[in-house]
Image: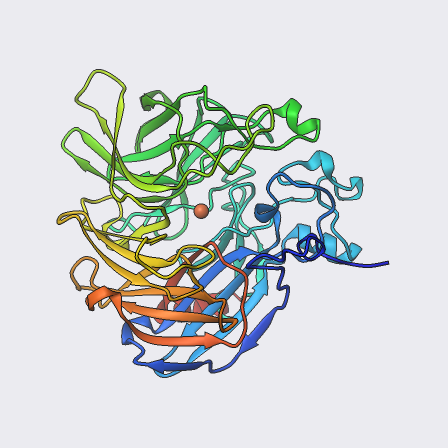
Length: 484
Ligand SMILES: [Fe+2]
């Protein structure tokens, strides 16, 4: 008998083998000056497989259990904690002491004993809304996480009002209204093209719910908002019931299909959606979107083709880099054509902007990138602040063999100018085999860090995170006590 992860069997454990340890370190080692603006907790979420997989998988990385981590930042102290999201699926597998669920989004490959148990692993993003912390993945409902202990509190569906089996891992937060805007895909069946757009108000109540049909049953990983619109990108990575039932991959790349952008008035119905069309491309994450007269600009990752999923005959395309790109749709034009122009020439992803400017005309975008002049790393090697007005960049190199993860921006103070503040960046240092939390100052030349804390080991790469000020967490905990 044995229990061995395939990453180990292959002898190529990769940069991030399964870690699987839930852990806590009080008072990390650190040096520098910790900014007062960062008193709070930087939460992150990513995949970390608990058990060796049950079968071959079309997308194993996305099918690993959700692990949330937290850097809790005080005046001169940073604590660290990491725990699994205790999903229904992970509970079932821990009871069985082995993987019971099969391939990514394919229940036909599961052990029949787990039929009917929610399959999501909640491993993609962690977001904060209405004093509540949610771990999210687009194939299921979010799980509520205790922001202090990281204990899993249970699934969330707006007390049954959501009417969907899924919710995106990339909701958007309107800085003017404090609303959370979101969507769900495949809401009424594993491979359906039925989608949902929803708005939760500042108190977390579901105040708007619109259903619509996508052009095809495809992946919609991220979306964008402006004050008037919700913007959906449909790129031709599609699913098919017969293929999934036959044990095939959930997603395939169909380059003969068009890409579509659906722009829905936030207060409109499905029939009000305005459609724009272009050639096939692949998109991942949004930087921002904004209105300029009749124009809608959408800043996002664009790859000329998909290199993550096979095509209909099982062929994988050569890798195509994600590049920051501005897509523009013209409401004043009777046509339905979208245009594209590049924002940067090298590969990049994990985009964001100053959260106070979401949906607004904005100057600064943040991203992780493969910057040509920076030392190499097994992953993105630099953090960039992109200045859309002057077309310039500040570039911070992560260091030799240091892979940078998603940057999360925190303003220096509530009234600070746009983009003036700090970037929280976790860095995997493969030379020293440790994990760094770097705090970059956007006003310094080349974003030079003002402080660094470190874990004395490598942890798996997380995907997305969020910073929550301590005052909001304290209020959340008080509210919980009141409810009890
Ligand atoms: Fe994502």
